[in-house]
Image (cartoon, rainbow, N blue to C red; front, side):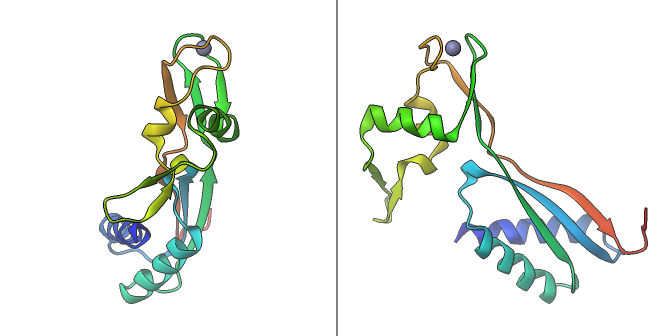
Amino acid sequence: MHEWSIAEGIVDVLLEMFKDKKLREVDIKIGELRDLDLDVLRSALNILSESRSLKGLKFNLHVSKARFKCLNCGEEWGLEKALEMVEETIGAESVIIEESGSELPLHFIPSLIIGLQKCPSCGMMDIAIDSGRELEITRVVVEDDRS
Ligand SMILES: [Zn+2]
């Protein structure tokens, strides 16, 4: 359950940065390639913040869309197009069997998504992930800050 360790990291950072302040709201940006279960993450955040003196803190989770970019010609595209290309290359039903024995749909592994695509425009494989892997605290509302 990596949602729990991520939630713990976020709560740690908040406690560290805003030691003596009462926090009201926190916005968090999460890239869709992170493949986090937002419901699980939200409850983890709620439970951990309750138990660690951040009672009543509201978490707003925002998903940022994945963008892929060709480093050769500058073409950009999103996850849907990327998955189409991956499926063309290896077949729609492919899954990775993890060491633990659990199956993971391929599209949840960003490094593989990169390796299995060609630029839809120029055909080169020199591709970067422009966005979609973020995990950032983007806004914190402190209780006595009413601006
Ligand atoms: Zn290109």
